Figure (cartoon, one colour):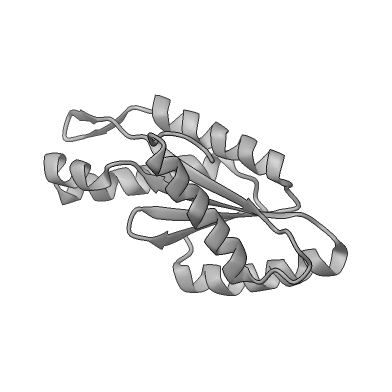
Length: 152
């Protein structure tokens, strides 16, 4: 999986390409709900296993041309070139449902996992990467504040 540094470089490239060709670009921020509780209840090894399994589940649900990166802590970023806002919302919802229904387990114990997702789409012509990231982050915060396990 790509790291934050790679993501920061990739978003600049994709932003430039999408602007040049007049294409859509959306960003999904995905965060595990109550991840600290998972670590505190099941241990850090279980938390690491859950993170790896979540990443694998996300990767299986996105296209080859989409970019999945670890953004920080228990947060992932999915950069989706040529997907408009409606399509990105649908993708976020599909991933959310997959994670919610997936049975995560570690050392024989089932670990309930849900995610929250914030979606933003390239808007104004002068939009910079930081503005897209900020909007996705605000939407993620909105999803968390309004009950978690949802896409905003």
